[in-house]
Length: 100
Image 1 (tube, helix red, strand yellow):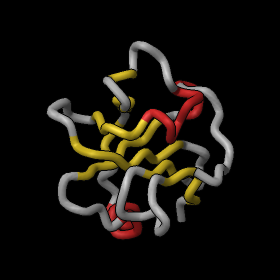
Image 2 (tube, rainbow, N blue to C red):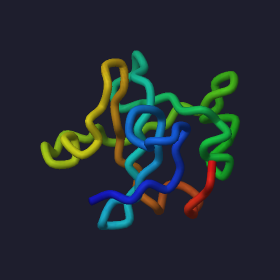
Image 3 (spheres, helix red, strand yellow):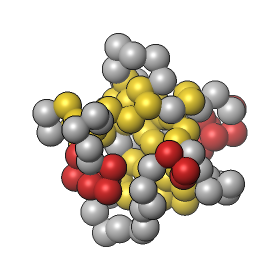
């Protein structure tokens, strides 16, 4: 099961959260956007990824492959208005577990 690396809420499952999958990929849970395969997260959640290309006001727009695997979706239990994308570690700077 994915490991929670950073979350913007205490329970780590019903708000923008960055998980690490068993294969090392990042699963980024955030608010849906009009762009398919893109989620919105607070910029402070992933300061290492904060670049002008990804910045939108106080948020980051994170693009990746939408999570569609049933087991992962069941684990994430995404609320209405949220989605999750998979981001390859080679595409972004490393993140470590944080107390955010």
